[in-house]
Image (cartoon, rainbow, N blue to C red):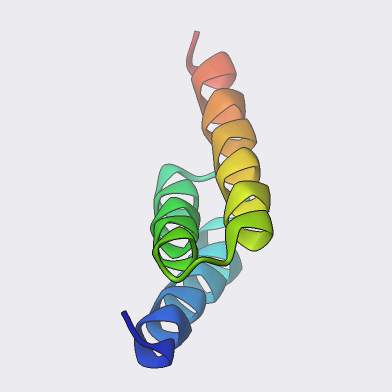
Length: 66
């Protein structure tokens, strides 16, 4: 894992947020992948924060589809 991978996931997340919004499944997915990468790099607090935000976003999408 490298800083380049983190930068790539950050760019993907930013693009998804800009184009699709915060509560879109693709935005949550890219946020979760960034969180996974941060976790593997040992950046646990940042990873936890992003995992929680991705989960909240996914939950919002699921609630709207019911």
